[in-house]
Image (cartoon, rainbow, N blue to C red; front, side, top):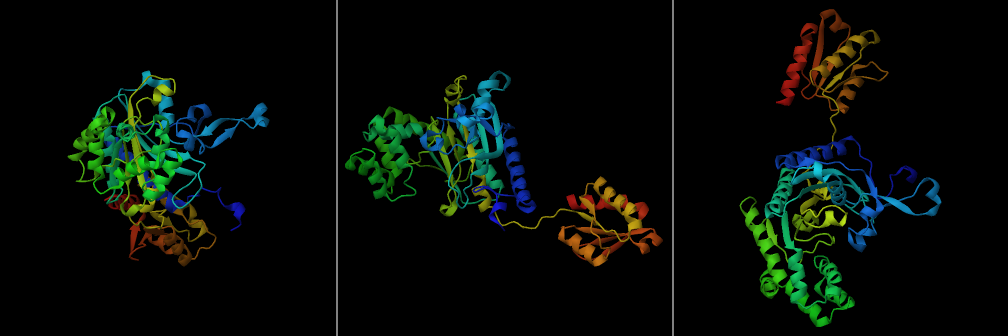
Amino acid sequence: MPTQFDPPSGTRDFLAAEWEIQEHAFARIRSVFARYGFEPLVTPAFERLDVLLGKYGDDGDKLIFKILRRGEHEGSGEADLALRYDHTVPLARVVAAYGSQLPTPYKRYAIGPVWRADRPGRGRYREFAQCDVDTLGTTSALADAEVICAVHDVLAELGLHGFRFQLNSRRVLAGLLEAFGVPAGLGPGVLITLDKLDKLAPDEVITELTGRGLPEAQAGSLVGALTVKDAVEQIRDALKGSEEGAAGLDEVDALLSLVGGQLPDDRVVFAPRLVRGLSYYTGPIWEVAAAGGAGSLAGGGRYDHLIEQLGGPDVPATGGSLGFERILMLLPEQGTGSSRLDVAVTIMDERHAPRSFAFAGAARDAGLRASVYLGSSGKLGRQLKWASDTGARWALIYGNAEEEAGTVTVRDMTSGEQAAVPLSGLSDYLADLAAGAEG
């Protein structure tokens, strides 16, 4: 196919079969979130640029898709709008704008596309769906635990196995920097580098840390503590002398205690080197690691002061986001065929068309998906092939013989069996088919 017909790099077209798989997954996600009492929120596809900039760190800001000014300002080359990068910052804007109209705490979920000017790759797109769940208005650790459990239940409901939540706290990370004597000015950069420990060898991380200005011995000590076999115990010991670090450990332990009775053993574990690079996190943070090293499936944490940064009230908040595209790649094998119809109605002769068209209407009235044959050939074999290609479970055949007998032939497309159904009883017969299909 000529490249001019390809979708833009990093985007995709969705034909029926693939889209229906996604819609089925979306429905399950909505169902789980609703069971936890979260309500939907829909925001615009684009936001004011000043709302988005500065909320994702320098690296994140570079990935924002900017929209150039329009009209008389078009020639300036300046941008004033941008496609949304995630659902979290738009949520913060909504709460700042409509806070008095929202319940407290406010529990919401959002499902829809986001855009990032990233380099496309396998499982990584510039336009992709993201599913978020958040609770605003409470500092209770129960809210953090509820988000984690809701995300867990979504993944389990979708049929995934072997995933694990890695849990940490920004306060643990702050205490870690303090315990290892990292200067405040180097702290953010050091954390960004430490976040690469799952992708780079320890020696490579040490080299990068020294490049950021950290003495080699200090860098080696820090990386060593995070990568040894008993890293969790070593970090816990190291943080005993840090008030901030100890407070972070209390946050982690409180969450582990809350979710421990709800989720399978070892499904949530303390991971002291987990960073989560987004700058607005303030407390507990977490990621879901897929089995077999397939990458992160979800992530989130507490971000208590983001609403205030947007000019609204200082509302505590916690939430998480599902990496929907990566999750889709890991879902259990599903059929690729798309069943568009339940009932396919043949047109054996143009003079029978009005009655056959009415049969399709009767099938839809019974709750079945139905359509008539729209081709030019009246040959039964070709029409039955069309019925099979649409995935129809039944075909209705009405020709001269059926007209004389006052019946309709209903063919089971799976078994090939046929039944002659009186015209007067067709509606009831179709209703029975619909009831059996639902059962």
